[in-house]
Length: 175
Image 1 (cartoon, rainbow, N blue to C red):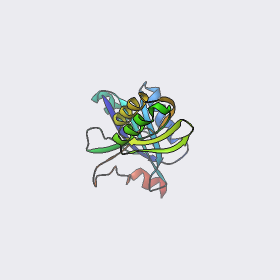
Image 2 (cartoon, one colour):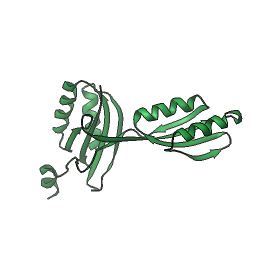
Image 3 (tube, rainbow, N blue to C red):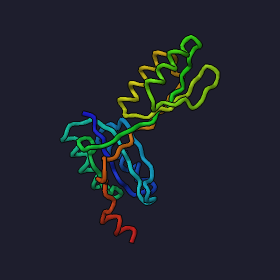
Image 4 (cartoon, rainbow, N blue to C red):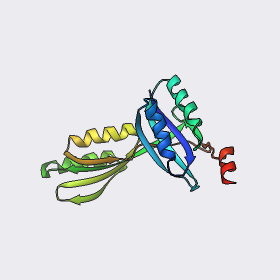
């Protein structure tokens, strides 16, 4: 089962490598990984997508909590959350397919053409992983995919619920 894990960790050299190393050492596959500083520059949010049973995910969370850099971790999958991914797609569109291209763009209001160079259209699209997959499938029928880049999933819990970074470990280490 597809799972979205959100981790707050100290924003320091090697922290990401230790989390990723823990996954690879135990044979867990990471399907998507996104990491960037939060509004607090001392803390980064790492969002990863993996697959596994409840027991496997519980084990991942327990083992991740043992890492000194991990301040908090949560499985967002079963929580009310919002997830999104960015896609940049370079698509070669022949002149005879331009009508279909414009029609397909109208079906995806979050898609935006950000560059046109010759017959290549570069499109930016945001949506859930499933929506990005659907978008790619639709546009692959219209033109030839030249190149693409996907950001990986970013996710947060809805409303006022937050992954707390008020960890005693952070307070002790920054004091």
